[in-house]
Length: 199
Image: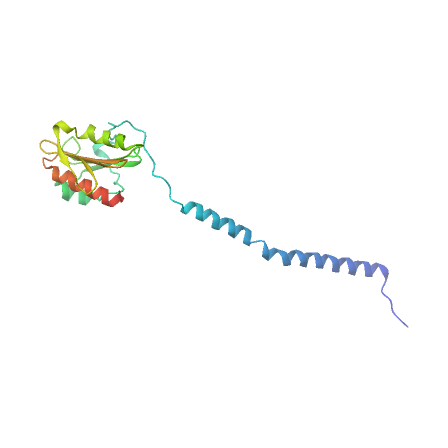
């Protein structure tokens, strides 16, 4: 006697097989799907790696740093070491503040006197003329001597009661005020800032 499968059972088996094949087909295609996100991720990381133009601050040429907490502040300068500043300017640092309105934050250091012992301003301007105007504001030609260090930079310096060193190269100006008498101290700070920031 020959046994035959009932028709209903056969339909169930065929349907189950068809579903299994469809699921298997979907599973076989899924490993090929991940490369698309990887390609997108690679493209994203490449676009992030592209060089970005430096930010240009829109403050007036004669803008001076403002530190809300004043001489009681203590926010480290991102490009100058506080102990190095104390050693170079010859005074203990009792407070340090940063003004982030500038595209490169301005840094202000205090010691025991009321006025800052050191103020460092880095300006990234739209034009060379504007960078020169920053130096002319800080170190007017009629009251300062020529400053030409480091190589390629030019501006003015003044010693005496509150020294300064202000130089410009292309669209960047670096201005350093110190409450010391020697402009050499302000110069050393300016040169170190320029080196540390790779300007």
